[in-house]
Amino acid sequence: MPSEIDKELNGDSMLMQKSRHIHCDSVETLTIDGENGPRFQNESLEGYKVHDWNMNETAINEEDYRMNTNPTSDKQVTQIGSFRTSSTQSAEILTMIDTNDGFIHDNPTIIEDVANERQNMMQQPIYGVQISYDKAWRAKELALGSIRGSPEESYNTLSSYCYVLEQKNLGTITDIVTDCDNQFKYFFMSIGASLVGFHTSIRPVIAVDGTFLKAKYLGTLFIAACKDGNNQIYPLAFGIGDSENDASWEWFLQKLHDALGHIDDLFVISDRHGSIEKAVHKVFPHARHGVCTYHVGQNLKTKFKNPAIHKLFHDAAHAYHVLEFNFIFGQLEMIDPRAARYLMDIGVDRWARSYSTGKRYNIMMTGIVESLNAVLKNARDLPVLQLVEELRNLLKNGL
Image 1 (spheres, rainbow, N blue to C red):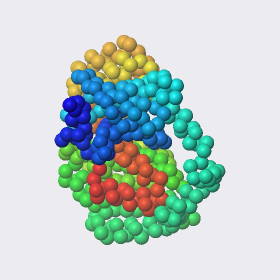
Image 2 (image 1 turned 60 degrees about the vertical axis):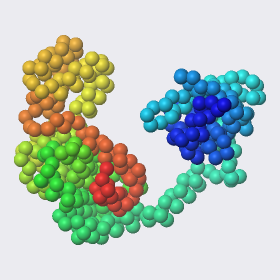
Image 3 (image 1 turned 180 degrees about the vertical axis):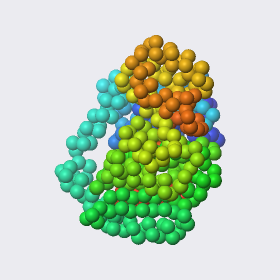
Image 4 (image 1 turned 135 degrees about the vertical axis):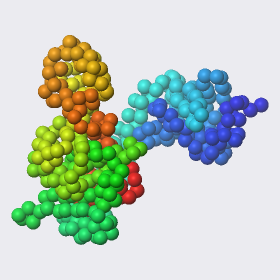
C-alpha cells in the first residue's frame, strides 16, 4: 500500500516533475527526480558537492515528513521537516547521520561540513592548474577587453552614439563636455519621450542622487527620477561626472533645467549632500528643496542611538496636520532636546510634511533613485558607452 508521500511524489502534483526544485531557506536544497522512482538529490548552497539518496521508506504526519534512506555518500538523511503552502512545497533537513562514525548531526554541523568542503576545494586545483591571483585577474581583464573593447575606445565612440541617439529619438538631449586637453569631463542624457511624459503626466517632484562608477576611470553617475501616476519609477535624466562636488552637481542640474525649462511648483528631493543643496538653490531658485526622511532618520540612529527618537521622528515627519506634528515633536524634545535641536537646524519645512512650503505629493524619500542605483549595480562596471546603452535599454524595456 503506497504511503501518502509516495502518492505525492508519483501522483499528479507539482512534485512529479523531473528535477523539480523544492524551495527552502535551509542549509540544503533538495531536488526530486521521478524518472526512475523517487530520488532526493541534495546540493549544498555553496554548490561544491552533490549527494544523492534513494528513498526506500517514508512516514508522514500532519507536522513533518520523515524518511530513511540508503545513501550513495557518507551521510544519510534521517529527518526532514516539510510544509506546504498554496504554491510551494518547502523542505528542510533537520538531522543527518554520518555512516562513518554513526553519529547524528544537525544543521550547524552540516554548515561546518560545507565550509570544510569549500576549503578543501580551494586547496586542490580542479583542473590540475595553479595560477596566481594576479595572473587570473589579468586574464579576466583581457577577456573582458576583447568582448567590450577598451575604455578609451568607448569614450571615443560616445559622441557618435549620442548623434545617432538624438536622430532616432526625437526630442532627446545629450551633451558631452571635455577639458582643455580634450579629455572627457561630463556627460548628460535625457530621452525625448521621458521629457514629454514629465510635462504631460508627472507630478513635479524630482529626486536626485549620485552613485559611484567602478570601471577603469571611475567617476560618478548622476540620476534624476520621478514617480508616475501609478507610483512607479520614472527615470528622467542621467549624467556622468568626476565626483559629487559643487561643479559637477551644478553642471548636471543646469543641464536638467535647460532640458525641462521653467516648472511651476517644482520640488527637488535629495539627501543632505552640501553640493546638491548649493546647486539646487542656484539653478532652481524658485523650486523648493526637501531632504530625504530616510537619510535623516539614519543619521538620528547614528548620532543619538535611541529607537524611541527615530520612531517619533518618523511619525512627526509624516504627520499631516501641524497640531499633530507639534504634539509628537514635543514628545521627542522631552526625551532628547539635542535631537530636537539637530532636526530644527536642518529646517523643519525640509523634512516635515505638515510644515512643507511646497507640494511634495507624499514623496518623502529618495528611494526611487536608490532603486535605480541597485538596478544599475552591474552596469556601473561597464565602460562608458556600454553603460549609456544600458541606461537606454532600461528606459526602453522598463524597470
